[in-house]
Image 1: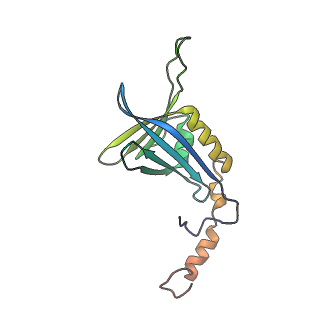
Image 2 (image 1 turned 135 degrees about the vertical axis):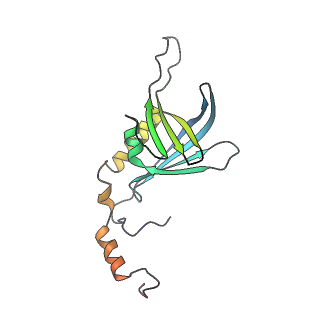
Image 3 (image 1 turned 90 degrees about the vertical axis):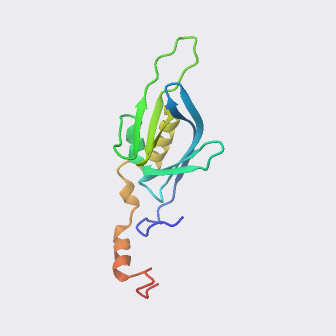
Length: 164
């Protein structure tokens, strides 16, 4: 994977991955089981990649700002193509199996949308691990904008400038 020149390479790289079962919500009592893989890398400190897999279909990858996931486990967030919100489950009778609270992720395109439900426990664990890798608000510490700007101004790496 190629990264823009403004990401530092000197800091040790960290990678966090989590596999989660998901439900694609089709209606009040209808869903389609799926699997999601959440992926975070300090090479791209502002984003989370989520790859959805449904039996028999090609995987679908979504890339979105990690702050949507971090904030969305607590309060509804997002106004664009990706929206995230917590959803508490009703209390269970004492003799029933416990049901996890959920994190809902709504993915949209101009043509359609999909609403996905995940175990809040699993998503919270992933969020805790990505915040351990890079604390919220410190993502820019991984950027080397001065070096990138100097490279751009000098024409370094630009085949049209003749510099290598």
